[in-house]
Image 1 (cartoon, chains in turn cyan, red):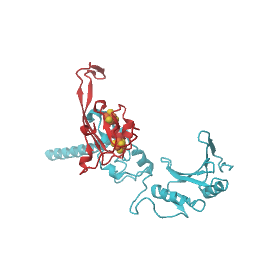
Image 2: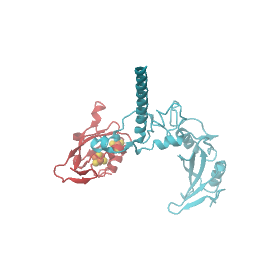
Image 3: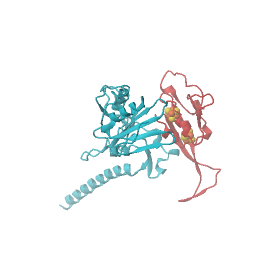
Image 4: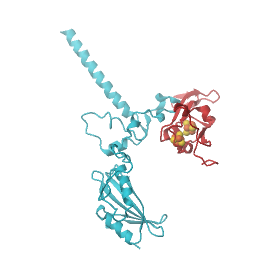
Length: 229
Length: 110
Ligand code: SF4
Ligand code: SF4
């Protein structure tokens, strides 16, 4: 049986599922897959990806099985800013299909892979399974869950419900023109949904109100000066 | 799962529903709409609150709509309802002449 010890020695055997997991370096991705195949893991089961925000990396996971269906998982981490990995198609031809899906959905580039899209139209901009992907249509649709039971929004306290997938307008959408664009982690965190402090909305309203008050104060001072003059 | 094993229509058992909003919030496609209001419950004794003695109130369901043109029959609402107010109810709804007619209210969901 294949030794699953990685170069970093991070090998674990999950006793319940009997899945052997190895975390390997991106540089050994293809070589380790080939070694696994030669050691009997000839069945390409699946290939998938996890967006690990707020950690700026993607985890790519390859699932293989041997003839007795004992599973092996090879995992590697690649940076979010430069999500490139060598293609496995010369080891498992069928992996190219899964790689095309990950390219469409997560924007992973597979060096030496099949560059054609498989799920999304060419016109689609963005990567729908990345955690900082904005569900644009949701931002402009009223969410039925925003109401409180009994519909007494005023009595709902300082925390209000927001839907998943719609980021805080201060982070995305109404962001101040002079502010640096929000980081992917910031966008993802603000779009997680659930109960959030009203402060977010109140702050925006408060700033507008303060601006109005400041303008009124200035106008009053101007009038007072004119009266004196 | 239902006795007949379908993920089809969903029934609202109105008297069980507390207007808690959980199903509307959990529905992935936002196809449940709920209106409710609060009423004083004349049969219940007053209760001590942070602001002194207050009459007890309860939520009254005014409107409950499932839009079958959006529903994907995932069953999350049925699973999540803490009051067993939603249950599977046989085959999918039949086609209708317009999208609006696929929005079922309390009576049609009974
Ligand atoms: S079955 Fe799913 S999609 Fe349909 S109303 Fe329930 S939660 Fe929404
Ligand atoms: S989760 Fe159940 S009790 Fe709550 S609003 Fe929906 S149907 Fe009514």
